[in-house]
Image (cartoon, rainbow, N blue to C red; front, side, top):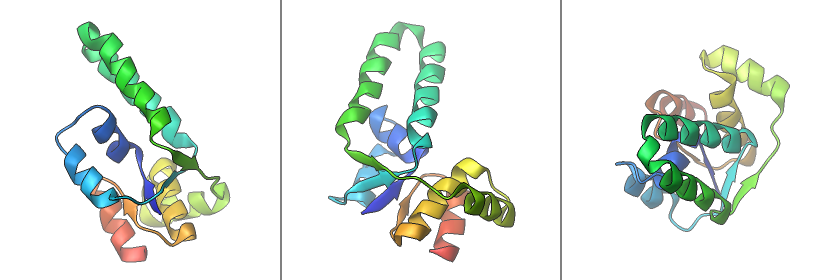
Length: 123
């Protein structure tokens, strides 16, 4: 199992340049993420649709592929997430992914270099 964050999943869903890197890192592992993943990806989709109105329908179809990725939504301990965020000076969103990877004792797949750096130090 691996924990995937929104930037990694967005790269795959929307065919961004680093999608292949993410797919290679994931391999055949089962996927997990905090419940906020779906909200973050909906926000990414909205921003992309606003920036590219001609591709709005296509982007929505790409976003719908999220349902086929079989990502397990796992609850996080929000109090511990706040502490982790404060300790590492990051958002609680990023800390949620980090907390979950640490809790499950699995790798975190992210394209966020700062988050990856913190993850490599504590996981």
